[in-house]
Amino acid sequence: MSRERRSLYHFAHARAGDKGDRLNLAVFVYKDEHYRWLLDQVTEEGVYQLFAHRGVTGVKRYPMPNLAGINLVLEDVLQGGVNGSLNLDGHGKTLSSLLLSMTVESPVSR
Amino acid sequence: MTVVVGCGAGFSGDRTDAAGPLVEALLHYDAPRALMFETLGERTLAAAQLARLQDPSRGVEPLLEAFLAPVLGDCLRNAITVLGNFGAANPEAAGDQVAAMAQRAGVKDARIAVIQGDDVRQQIHSLDWQPWEGEHRELPDSNDVVAANVYLGADALVEALAQEAQVVVTGRVADPALALAPLRYHHGWARDDWDRIAAGTLAGHLIECGAQVTGGYFADPGVKDVQGMHCLGYPIVEVERDGSLIVTKPPGTGGLVTEQTVKEQLLYEIHDPAGYVTPDVVVDLTGVEVRQVGRDRVSVKGVRGHPAPDRLKTTVSFLDGYQGEAEISYAGPNAMARAKLAQDTLQRRLATRCPADMRTRFDVIGISSVFDGDAAVWRDSPGSSSEDIRLRLAVEHKQRAVVELATQELLALYCCGPAAGGGVRRHLNRRLKTASYLVRRQDVTPSVSIRNGS
Image 1 (cartoon, rainbow over the protein chains, first blue to last red):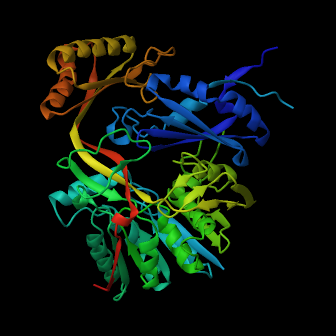
Image 2: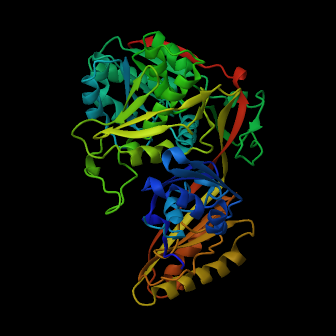
Image 3: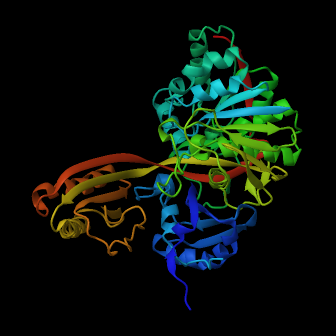
């Protein structure tokens, strides 16, 4: 039986930070017991696909079990960064919301 | 012993009335205490350098007085040390301004330290440059460089405190150094007590963005609710000698301090959490524990430190052409189709009127903008049912005239474009870009000068 598909937004919160053309997205599940599920659902490959249209060249995921979260580092996704981008949001601050719009399989409830 | 540090500003555009409640709260601690202001982003410093090039007395944080004047007298009279990077491109002039403010607050002999040595623009040819790990650009031509500033660590600030400075004015320093310095000084931590230096750096990191750890940049109605966003309390860290710390905020203020707010800020702008590189220490966050220990009180412990790097990050700002932006609105029935027609029309005009090396981007604001890449892959996404749309053109080129012409083409849509377009706005700016490199620590010489009154 396939599980319900919803957006990550229902299960996690996130914040974006920028340095140059690099973006980090810190993502935390609301419930600590969803941490393993987060690792299954939010993979480097999945995030790469989500940001492919922005010209991302690499995604590195750092698991942080102590925080029930992950840190994602995306390379070259800001198309010039805060001082070089033509995007209204050169910092990429809104991109935490793009990540949270990612479709995931709902966690199995216990 | 506990040492307490508050943060009264987290960026150059921050609220200017935040420090008042912080100082009131700091007064209630029977402990060494300090108040920091972090007002210097990558972009802010470059803008300040440009201002100074035009007028040698400028280049100071424009809101320095607005941030500091309301609380300076109380700080000076009550042994609350003030540390701020509001010196921006001109720490000496900022020191003058602080001295004048102290006089006006009725304090004649305030000891004000000015830290310099971060500005290495004059040494650009003699330094040994390596690209920072995320940097692809070659070092720009020195004729275009308007600013080159090294991220200094806490050493010079600690020295200033040892010389009994009451206010420490800096230009570019690593943001957390503004908190690490008083923590190192009062706790007597050794320069190479890496776990402690990491804890002090983490304390600074958690509060350096002001309200971002106390409920700012966090609220999402119905999901992550925050009370009192109009009067957010700015953060305070209480740091023990062993490096364990508590994040809190002044009583009676809005916002909240929870494990969620602290965790979001803990990883803010962090890349590898096991190796967060600062001038003072390489911080390892992988063993950090975050625990709610009371209302608006969150304990953070378990951070580890590794020896400080041999090279220091340096941000170089350079002029690189012009950016133009122009927007026009379409609303009501068939708005999306008219906006698309306007875009198609403009694209054909720009293709013949402007050089091929002009960078161009279109947004359809209200449908899809900030999530998009410049190639507009998402723009035909479903859900384009809005009847209030703003078409935005952004361009960049070396020549000002090209950028002017491109945005003028959008303006011409008033008469030549689809029906009922309105509300055109145009902007043109010189492009000030930044790139990051590493220079050898031994080539950088921070200095401390102390003035006694004005």
